[in-house]
Length: 354
Image (tube, rainbow, N blue to C red; front, side, top):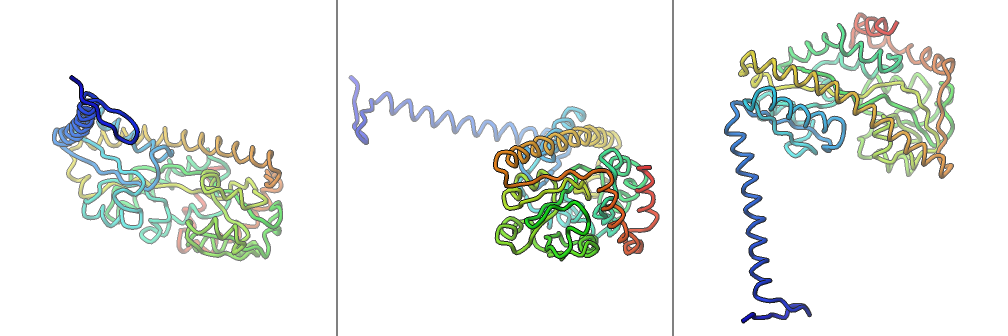
């Protein structure tokens, strides 16, 4: 005989209640099983790497971190397990470098700006119009200049493994189209805390305003600042294009990340496992660059679609002659940083594109 219960105007049989209990038990069992499998994999591995980053898994950096983890697992035949912690689940980039000193975290991929206190020469990448295009940029990153900078980071107690792309920066503002360098005169631009970027806008006769990234949208919306500089992916995801009237495709600066490992952890690895890490990071870097370009391209198309549909945003693409005028104007600030960055590094970076 079946027993029925009335709950919230719906009748349930005894069998329904039993089935619900079984379903809950199965969910609990599956959850415990997945935890057990993860724990057994960690226990089975000779080495465990905690890879911390601050972005979501579906970003180029997030995807590359996951790809790296998979390749390390395969190449090491399970001897090394990489646990990826996205979205600052372990810690933010401000503290991760300290944690890595004590091997509390084994890997991270902070932006260059997080390293400039340790290695001021990394301000090289803040210099405006240093690179002609992506090919020139990657020649510098993969060549003598890039290796020199990695070695400088190594001397600060880390193992610098690779450079990962975010993308080239573009200019936007709400007052007037930025076609000639003098068009920026008198405008207020938000900048990161960087002496190079402050000098960049001063050279244009503009007013640099240092503020956190999290405050940029509201500052643009309320007119606290007139414009900003950022990669397409940042402009799109933070919807800066919705509170700006003009965007100039200037490609004037570069934002990137440096992948680093704890030196204490690295020194524990045998030679064959170090080879595994190097091979996996090489493959992940190649993938990350492709994903970064694809993301910037696809998100630019969405911004362009918005501009075409609403008429609220004008996108300016500089001609070769117009770009050269910006280059000539802004490269005048380079000598101010010969002492900090090094004249030799700057000249070698420029020469790589000739």
